[in-house]
Image 1 (spheres, rainbow, N blue to C red):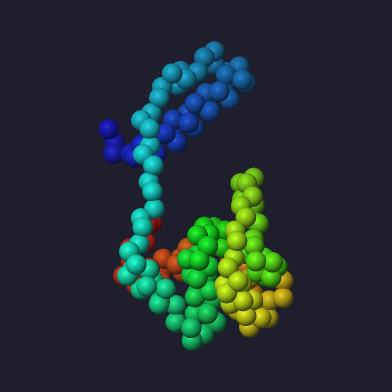
Image 2: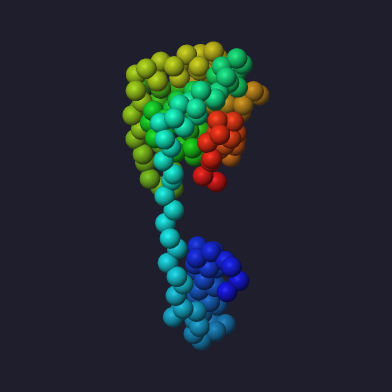
Length: 168
């Protein structure tokens, strides 16, 4: 009734149930009053699929005139060629580019991402230009590893410049 999304209500309800379970185990209450309450099922949001024209516009965006442009272009090409998640881009290493595959462990799951040969060569050339012999390929100007939010912000900026609406 307050205009909250089904996902927000579900999260809130899970918190309340968990809190009452804690109180129950601590002996502060005799029953969990939230146990029988159920929320509406949150609808699953699927990613929007870009048209071929939007993909072309997006891939043209990073201008390879400086280090940042080359980095953004390499990240974008990696995302496009492999379907890797933005949150996984930061874990791509020079070693993975040499082997042609990346094994990324997030949230207890290991994903193996195969890297096409042409992309591996480009990634290794980029790493060599940046004087990155090992570890994460994508770094800031100061040499620190890029964070997930930094990568997402760069991709969002490129989307906006291409006139392609980002999903968030």
